[in-house]
Image 1 (tube, rainbow, N blue to C red):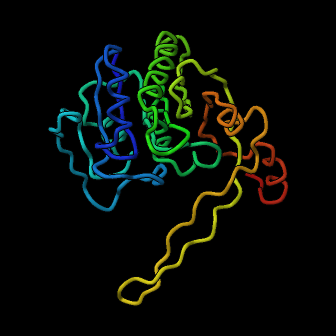
Image 2: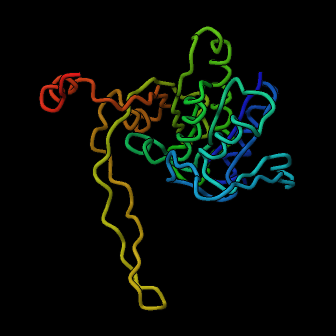
Image 3: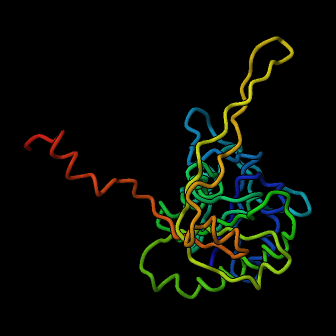
Length: 255
């Protein structure tokens, strides 16, 4: 068993170290992570410059491969030439804050896992519901439990799959119910924040994410609000299948 671990908070993030420690004993581990925080980069690949890779030597990060790029860069480079052997599983996280609903479209944590999925490798993204790393050890134990549950099925499913897991910041996270959910939806983001820099130029910060809009029972938002571990199976097909017929009628021409 080989496990590739990545994240989006950067190779020094406590969540990455916790996830690596949680996976000890499950198989051979490779860690390939961004040099700096790359939250919100979604599935971006760096195409306008070469990427550098170095080996970390910090006590908690010893042996980690570090890429000066995005989370997707890390997994892409790992799977297309950096690693000598293909992993059986890609895991990403543990993220500092939730990745629920529309967050999954922007999340670098989910994107790192999704990059593995796109290459045909089963993958899991792990996040804590709240920022601040409270009870990270409990979240790591919960992540290991989820991984241990899926490892025996890797060969049985016959194809890749992608899971998005959000874990409440609680000391008893391992004992919380785990529920399989669908993605909720958020309201539109808050307005940008305007500031003036020392040169007198107006600058803009992206505003905070909107509050939950669709958060009813069965959604990831609802599960988190009820103190449960949310596990959402994801897919990449963005096709609006229900609208295909209408668009064919309006726009298609005979072949």
